[in-house]
Image 1 (cartoon, each protein chain N blue to C red):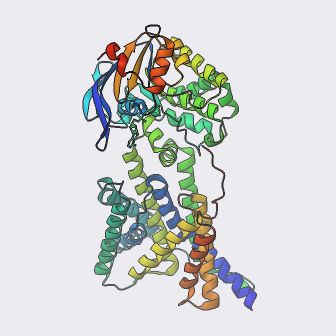
Image 2 (image 1 turned 45 degrees about the vertical axis):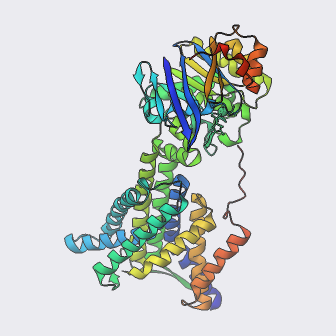
Image 3 (image 1 turned 45 degrees about the horizontal axis):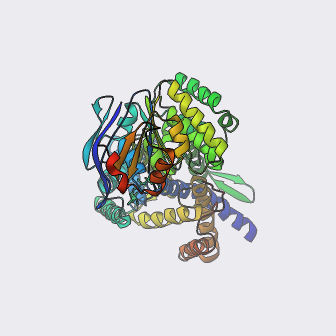
Length: 244
Length: 292
Ligand SMILES: Nc1ncnc2c1ncn2[C@@H]1O[C@H](COP(=O)(O)OP(=O)(O)OP(=O)(O)O)[C@@H](O)[C@H]1O
Ligand SMILES: [Mg+2]
């Protein structure tokens, strides 16, 4: 469904992505692991159109979306739950959800979807008139996910949804990720929580210093080694695993 | 009677201050969305009032039509300013748009001076008459100005808080990256903001013209400065702040004028600005709680 080919994205002269290729298969959960500064967020923003890659190609459902605007990419059915959630702090929970449906013209269906979000995230319903900036971290994460879902994406990108959250909330988030996937949404997930990520993922990638250094199914690599490489980025000796 | 006269200047000042509030809202809204100051704003607003004057002189029409024409012209000028001074200028350089809009300010002022030979022009008065309340009186033209400005604010707040485009505008000002991620086009919202604030400014310019009874190029600089003062006192980006600060500046100006005369009053308005900059640099509502 999502196909990234050899993309290079730079901030000024510094290349944060040095030729990244990976794919997220339709209907599956694909995970991207890697240490801080590996370029995971840069990759997510490059796919979503917020950053423009210098080279390479990104295809979504077979269509080339490289260099397209974020709004065009949302219209093609991709949504990103950004790192640090980025809710609209001075807007209510309900308004955040409405903003998520910005491109939709079916007001009645949008209202139905908002109710669906409230059913899935009961805490948001309780807080529908509260300003998003006053929600707890976990609630903000739920809101960011719900907001992204309001565009009815075919593929959902999530950038470290468990960041800074208590274990119970993390479990909850991953349960929802699994549910969404069962409902047919393709998931592409960046995670630092290796244990949880390997539990839900069908396929995962390791990324270090702007390059993909491993690709495989969970179980192909022992969890401790993934942890070691994802957190510490110490894989130069293990680069025999290297794939494209 | 000192007290009666003082109350009289306070009331007059509050009523006229509504126009400053509109100009302040214009500055603050553009700042909220783009984090830039549009220095040409007040000049374009006065320019729009002139455009309405010209058009009425040309094709005729009732006095109140000047308000609507000025609003329309203000919207067009706003869009022109956006395209010439913002759209293709590198926004990462904080001085670039400041310089481009100062240039536009000078251009607008020059155009006004040249097309009017620098002479003040009479402006159509919409409402005349004075309501005599015994000890003091209420000027009908100022009440009209106040009510119109209030209406414009209600319309603006409705647009911002009750419509989809309003949600998009607030989204862009609060979290531009997330706004893009939900599919909002920043360029569209920026352009829309310039059109809407331009309309507010043109409307305010015409209201000022109708209350003062004339338009003069000499209005441009004081209106720019007062608009900026209102924006600072109200807190950059805060619409309620701009409204309160506009009324406050209008009132203070009249009170200072009452005590110190028209030649000195702006000195004290400036002093008021410094007091705020020192003691409340974030504006009237600066202590609101934020969390992220
Ligand atoms: N706006 C920016 N300007 C310059 N350099 C940046 C910018 N954003 C990120 N970088 C650099 O690009 C590299 C990749 O950053 P990125 O945020 O993509 O990493 P990450 O894998 O998401 O890390 P984390 O796990 O900490 O979120 C880092 O070296 C970072 O310093
Ligand atoms: Mg990151």
